[in-house]
Image 1 (cartoon, rainbow, N blue to C red):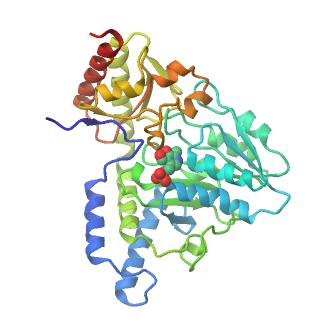
Image 2: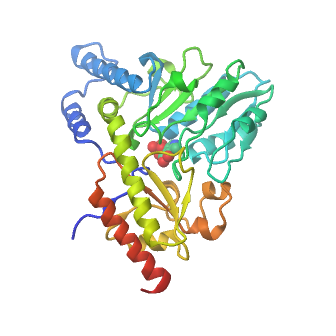
Image 3: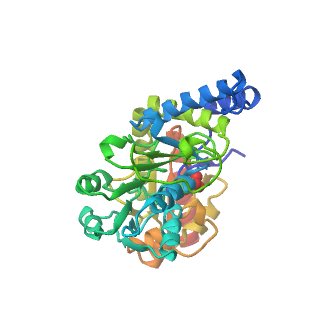
Length: 381
Ligand code: PLP
């Protein structure tokens, strides 16, 4: 039996062979501690520096403004809790969107439990915040606005650069969780005008266990873990050298392949949408039609539950309902709820996310299996 087509790249991506090769060499040979003064340690430190340059260059940042973390969740926690910790008592208000990943939502709720005021800005039916609503939510005591760049479930892109322009002359900091955006669309910290930006390695062909936070020079932020002085004191703990090297290689690959991969993923995404729409009357797209990640297709199948559909097609397709972190839960996704979808449509939703190397044949195979499963479930055909 052939391997099912993998259409869940928003959950995680395969590790690129170049990344695996570089990590394997690092695991075997570059085991030195970058803090050690002798050549083995300094060679590891040099490789970490090379990787930092590559990741920084991918997002138009300076290497010294990048902090490596254990994952995107940790980067988001550092952004929110680290900024909060550096704030004066008269700045204890935070603004986020209603469709943030739990890795932002949960630390925001944690701050709320500690007495911070939290404003959650609603989204429209396409999953977008309005720039005006975000700016209107800002008050004299606002310390930080955190709005994701791309949504993990529906792929909708938020108007982060426009929000940044509006906040330009204020002392309010702007963080964006770009975990889903980096490696899929061009991301440039200067063009975005943000102060803090989160990266997730395993969403663009690096390994799990590595993320990064971009922190603009001069941003008031304090560490949330306490230990030695790694990562300019912002993230103590001996560096995960193999994973950092892998992240650097993934960043180089992304820089080389992004333009072509972006177009290829968009073509596959639209091919899949067309194939499904042609055979499934009433199929509806969730998310913004245009302002959307090129790889993400979230559609609601009528009359069936998305999970039942994926179970029925599981020999042929791997995909998910909602984000992977909620897999196993049958309640409709909070993101689709925030977009105002009714329960039936939300429960019928499936997220299909393409990768750099997804082929037309894989899309044709996956579409045929999904249509077959849908006909069987909806009509017993
Ligand atoms: N932010 C977004 C938008 C995500 O999609 C994810 C993972 O799905 C995360 C943060 C958390 O990433 P990780 O689990 O690697 O920490």
